[in-house]
Image (tube, rainbow, N blue to C red; front, side):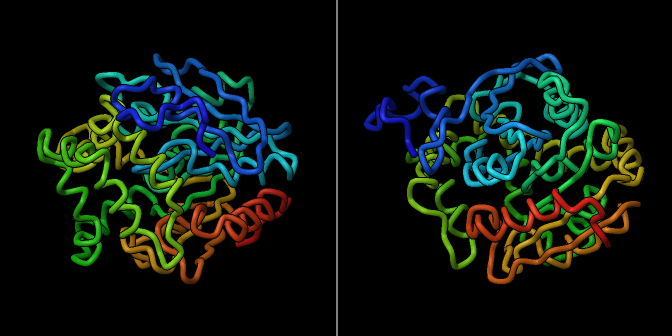
Length: 322
C-alpha cells in the first residue's frame, strides 16, 4: 500500500526519496525500515519477522517492494525476512562507482554481516539473481542457501547472450543501455512511462497491478536512479573483452556449493527458459529446477502464493534433493 503521507500529485523528482520507497506492505503488517552500512555505502532495508535470515534481492526496474508478498509469507513461516535496495536504487546510496557484479555482490554479503548474522539464504530475481549467484560463488561461507528467479548463472547468461540469437534479441534492452545518457532520459520521460511498458511487456497473462506499476515508475524517477540502474548492464557488456570482465567470468567457474533452487516462468520473454535451464552444471550441491507454467518474468509478483509456497517448502526441507 502507498504511504498516505506521500504527496501523490508531485513529480517523484520533487519528493523526498524516503517517501517514495518506504512503503507499507499488503495486510497492514508493520515492516521495519532502516539503513545499514556495508562495503563503503549505506543501504536501505525493509525487515519483517524473526528466525533464520532470508535476504531478498530485487531486479530491474524495481526496488525492495517487489518482495512485499514474500516478506509476509516468510515472516509467517518463521524466518527473518529482509529485502534490501541495491546500490543506486530505492533508498540506498547512489555512489559514482561500484556497479560491477563483484562489487555489488560484496554489498550483499556486507549487509549480511551488518545485520549481525553468520549467513543467509539469498533469494534473488533478475539482476538480484545474478548477484546472488555471484555472492554464493565468491563468499560461500556467508550463503546458507541460494534461490534464483528469472536469471541464469552468470557464465550461462554470457554464453546465451553471445551465442544464442534468440536470447540476444530477447535481451536487446541490454544492448540499448550501452548508449550514453539516452537510456536514462527514456526511463524517466513522462514520469517513468517506459518502466510501465517494460513491466507490462515482460509479464505473463497475470499483469502487475496498477499500484505496483505506479510505485516502480515513481521510484525510477528519483534523481540518479535511472543512471545507477543501467550501470550494471553497461559493465556486463563493456567488460566482456576487458581484463576485469575476463577475470570475473573466470572466477565464476568456481562451482556453487550450497543447495540451490532455480525458479523460472515458462513465458519469460526476457530470459528464455533454454538460457536459464543449463545453470545446474555450475552447482555442486543439491539443485532443484522449478518452471512455473503460464508466468512471465516476475513470477513472485504474478503468482505470489505459488512462488512463496515453493520457496518456503524448499527452505524448510532439510535435505533438498536434485
